[in-house]
Image 1 (cartoon, helix red, strand yellow):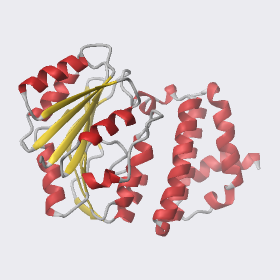
Image 2 (cartoon, rainbow, N blue to C red):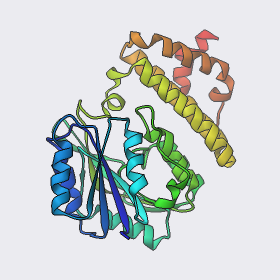
Image 3 (cartoon, rainbow, N blue to C red):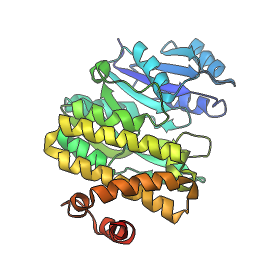
Length: 314
């Protein structure tokens, strides 16, 4: 059996998918299987994957009807045989030593999760993204807090190597668009040891056509997206507060902090179409004003926002 299962979902990415595939096939670490899930592409993405599979027996291609990202990743997980699992997006690039780096981090530290840093490519520029030089070995509680802080790393599935057994009880949702935010925190919470070193070994591609456009361009925020995020973060608070009660206070603060961030984006970008979502968030912040405002975790800029926009509504 292979040590690592690499899972990639592709959909209508015929101009970029070869680049992603080549970046995996050229890895210095060779003991992997490459599961490519064609998510009902209308173009030649699936055909391109099939052609690579004929040349390299480590590649297996699954063709399925179009579904959300979660359903595609689950299809890949159903076939995965590796000790570890990692995910790559079909418009991104893995640097040639990424698998080796993540594998050694996990093996040397008996870690259920290992992760690296990354770059992101946007507007023809390569900029650091979640980059830090120090090595950190964490338990679940510490790793979840770092995830919620979004300083060292975030909820993106790529850049992380997971012990496959974590997926025995945790899977991606088969509905909804933003699947990472509903699953990644659960995987961290279930892990015993998490090894992290933010040396960049992966490059995200940011463009209007990819799934992260709505999360990186504030002007594209819409009520459906906001409401999906609010539901996901409320469920996150419930799950983590039960699983890791020691950090329940910080988890709840993080949910309110996210609400502040969304409110600010709506105001700054004058997103009048999000008025109903703004009202929902304001109602929540009014209800828990004292708990949030006097939290030991709150930052000065969050207090200033509460003073400007929420206190006047009391």
